Image: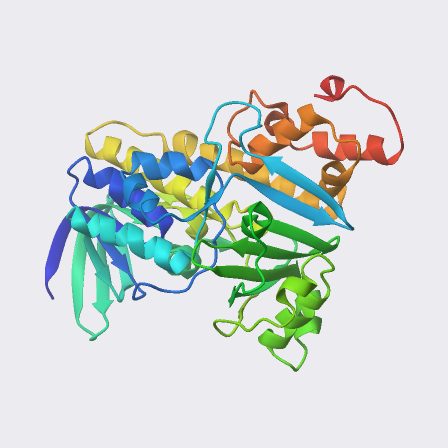
Length: 419
């Protein structure tokens, strides 16, 4: 069996793998990317948040992506019972990008891989990792292409950016149950023939139908719009019943007073996809000779579009640390990678949990709005969840619950005292 030797093997060519590859390619590291799918391919994760723009920039991918003129996303809108809560990324606590994009992921990921290939990055599509063995920090992998041909790849380090494929967690038995309650989603794309002119037609929205049930609406610049229903798994299963995913998504649209007229008679571009119990976690994020990034390590919930952000944050961080290690530096993977990523994951986990308890929704939809509180929450929604100068990051585990309790009990408060 042929053996190919590289410095770093990257599993997966989604956003996490691409930013890792882009960063390492700029530093002349010998890398190999293997991707099980053929691109372009359908995948969820079409709403980005501003923090990812830092990563695309560092990876040298920003010019290629900007040239595609994706739909600009300057904020996010949440709707409940006729009350609209709009978060403007240009009006947030702290520094950071004030916009990002709404993107059809098939095209977006394909654009990134094409840009990398033009720079000379070796990407093997339709190639799966069959087995892997680690010895003294070096790995020997067996990979198989679509024709069934196998070869070995010897690498000094492996970055698993395989997303929902969760290649190393499966092979090394690193999976563990998520700390979040089971939720599921159904989504598809539609031709947005009734799209309103102006800002209304381009805004990403999350329409709250019940406390744990919401509809996403993500307009793209190509005239299509992504529609999805998210709810606890039992609700989705009941909605689906014996009628299938398409009927379930149509029923969900009919539940939306805000969007029913715009999408009631629409047809789906593809059979709606059912993602069941998608939240996932692992027992460890790294090991001797490997790191897990993106959905390979942890996936929370789509309500705040954090998935791609954690993918790119962990992807480029793993690349930086692996590069330093290749240069002979001692890297503390626990502190610099696992602990760091966990801090951001813990913040978003608090926000996801408090969304579904209703506490965060109380803050979103309470009137009158507290603009200072809103700016600090907006920074979290923009992905700047490692900035502990923001009290809504530093005190994430209690501030939302405390403020919601006081609002619901008509207590006056100075939120600074709570922080």
